[in-house]
Length: 272
DNA sequence: CCCGGAACCTGAAGGC
DNA sequence: TGCCTTCAGGTTCCGG
Image (cartoon, rainbow, N blue to C red; front, side, top):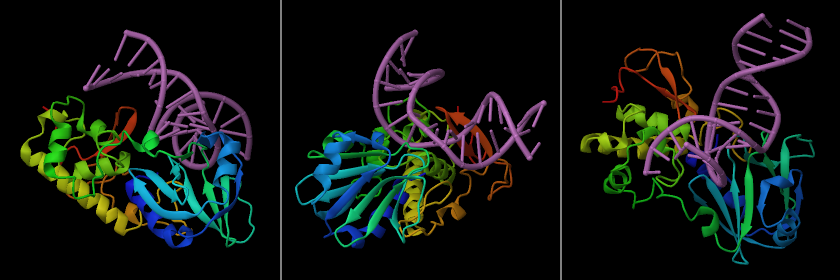
């Protein structure tokens, strides 16, 4: 599932391919993935526009155009953005972009949940996101204030895009394990030391995952088709039943807010 | 603010 | 082997 490290990998990999190129054509095989404007207007307005730069906010990829508009993509669970090679048919290609140099880009998404927008004001799409956890402004104090006075489980807040942008299920589990904090702990019950450990764990886990080009655990691949390798560094995420790499206790799985949360019941002390 | 559930999707995994 | 059910997950929306 593309979370921050996966989308950042896509951004870095595709920069040289996209920047300076113009869109020559768009084929929408699943028009419902376009949320704004209408699919017809989306395709018509995109063709001819040049890519100025690639950016990322949270799990959103932002393609800034010379017109001042932005093409924004969200990959949800199963989306990836692949440079198409040859003329092989991919039944999961939901949108195909052709560039002015003949390069083709496929928005591949088996579960059809990815979304796209073409907007003049990025804020209408990404305006409510919380801070970027890898930017210098994301200090210990930033995190502490975002968790203070919140009674929800810390795991739920880490996955809330309005609290921190880009953290999803996998990396929330990994960060909580690295910080030794139980996912059900009430956010307002964390000590200063725990928030400090969590802050360090978040930046470390996300930064390391970017260095490994993201985690290929479901349908995520890098734009060139290579898998990421961050999943090999996971200690608890999706490791239910396997022994904790620190103490050997079997990793447990617990639904929190409808999402499977993996943790070590010994290393991550119980709530309360 | 917090919570649960539904909706969107389909491949994978489990039960019988 | 095959049919059927359930699950997974990010986001949004709705109701309590």
